Length: 295
Image 1: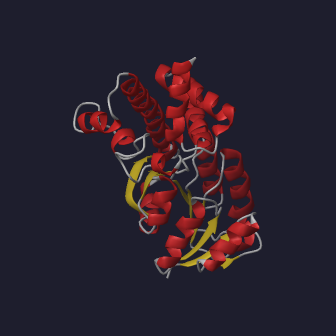
Image 2: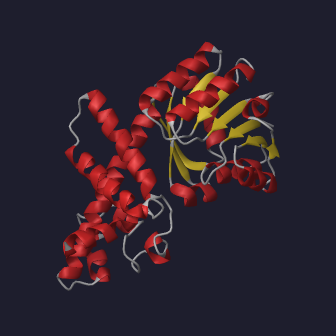
């Protein structure tokens, strides 16, 4: 039985670790937050008193942390305690450069590594239906895949070190832009006297079809499982969308890529966040779009 250490037990990491336990894996977990540790213990994981002690004897280590600086700090702490030839997987969403630096740290310690950010939100984390976008050497990816399959339904090898982060950044830029576009269409439909259901039935089967419409519709009714039917409780918080769109803009600047819609989407979500809506699901951006129509 593969022994796994899991570092970072927040809204995403906690359910992911729980799914590894359900799959019969021995999981030793750690988080700085006591409530998160207690929940992981209730889910069947063993609890370590530090990140470094959690990884001792583990064949695979999974990290799920807020930002690149946290990943580099934690990896610097735990890599010396890991056995040569073991595997470390980072499922955080971070900048590409930090991901590459993390891979280099692992290589210096003789540890195989994969950057594997996720898509699917807290619902996907709980259901074990996440998509993992993976970067790293082919051998490391093949070793990581059986572990990731216990937490997700689609595992994609995107390329070398940092490629998983690149794919995640590009995907979420599409998501942020498309959610604003769908919200603008519904706000316009309201002004024109067109019902939400009528627009949904047309656009969901026409050229306007997209995930932001058919799976995460920003108005109540047409898609019963969307956060719009639960007062926009996340889900995927707007503050996280700001983070991802900012990562995309930083990457675009570094690469010399023009992303005017991505930049505008970042500005719109930053305004929404600054107005106190960071904890609102990102589909709640329709409220901001409506407010713009009133000014």
